[in-house]
Length: 149
Image 1 (spheres, one colour):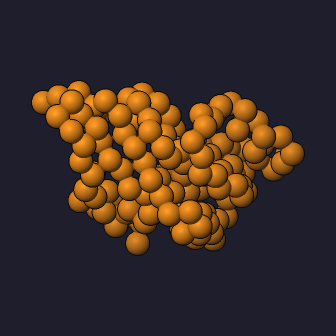
Image 2 (cartoon, one colour):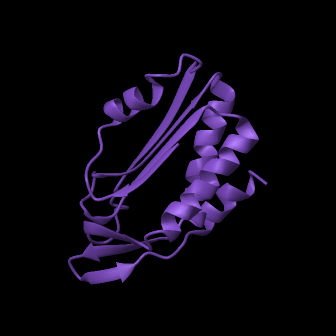
Image 3 (tube, one colour):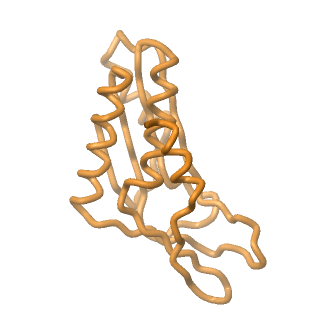
């Protein structure tokens, strides 16, 4: 298990290689990489600033990781989430799950992203030409997590 909160860019290929190199039981790798996106509103997104509460955020992500391991019996999990000021199309999050079989590996990865969107303490501020505003939680993210109960 590895959980990292960082400002630096990550290399997906390198991260997957590191996670799978020493475990010959791995038969499946599921990944999700999220990018900063411009939702195409009335004005362009200039940047997205992510803030977190150090210590609390890592603890919340470790809890999610433990839940995924217990439920699906996956082999390993990597969660990297960036913080700081990011531009549209910058990588923001990487979740990599390894398992012996694809089914549980896909499910654990999808669960982790759904849970991360609602249960991890990150705060997002969008900057547009007209100013800044904090991003409110979305009902669709709560609904996505509901299906895992």
